[in-house]
Length: 270
Image (cartoon, rainbow, N blue to C red; front, side, top):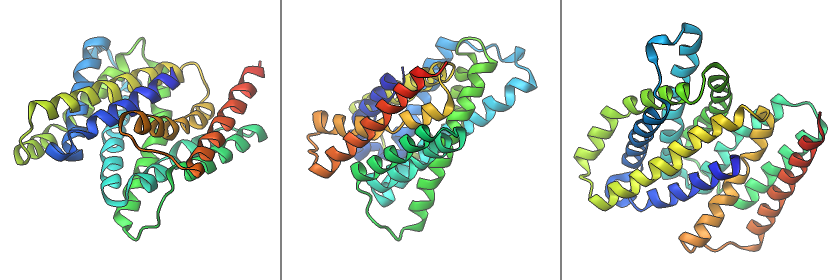
């Protein structure tokens, strides 16, 4: 489920990027959130009136984090480039992995995965402190997303909690999306690409991550998230013709090694 979530996310991002010239990154994120909200509400059918206060607070926080995570990452990419933005964002799951485990093997895998992410994304120095701040905000949001999605999955049956969070997140983007789409009128093709990104990059990962986090520890999930830059590079190579050099292939090898060791270590535990 985690691998499928990552692949779906990166394919959706690649398709969504075709709409950037028409409605911009913020417009794509807004449409993504609306599509994810509609799809997950139809699947989860949350009974909002039955939610207790104990259930509501992680849903509200997850909705805010989900909205802020996508918006901050896309804004960071626009200011400081994909490599540095993705590297900064990975500090989120890396922090979860390092803080949630005390096993030497887990710590070693997390460090190796981090080195692989740096080698793969090739971050360039930047003096755009706002862009760096947005990348760090995306990291904090991703770490919070992991922990909150795990909490929501434990407190709700099925996908009710996830659907409610997605619906609230979609509402947060209504005023932002209206302003952006009025300023940048969309074409049918741009809307189709953004809608595809909504299904592949928001709906599928949001649901499968919640289900996966019911079955795996948070630190293992954090390490495994290092596979996202690998999948992004693969999708970029296949769909966008973006070729990799030897240093990036070594980064992929480091990430694959870290995840293989982490999976093997987890499978040996009682």
